[in-house]
Image 1 (spheres, rainbow, N blue to C red):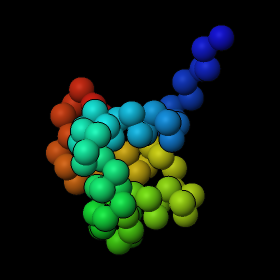
Image 2: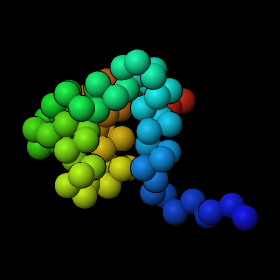
Image 3: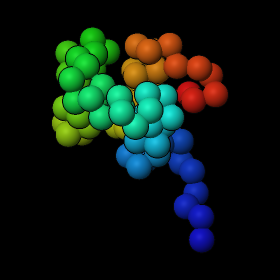
Length: 72
């Protein structure tokens, strides 16, 4: 049975989008090492671990990278 979409981005969906945007070789290092101002000077990993919603983290990643509309 499909899970209804609530407007939230699940963490698994977030990582699928990161892979689509950065590729398998770069997504993990981007998440681990790239400090983003929009995440209050944290990395993606730090922000997610601190409880920032995956949807908000994805929004910041999209703004920082200029992600194409099809991935937003």
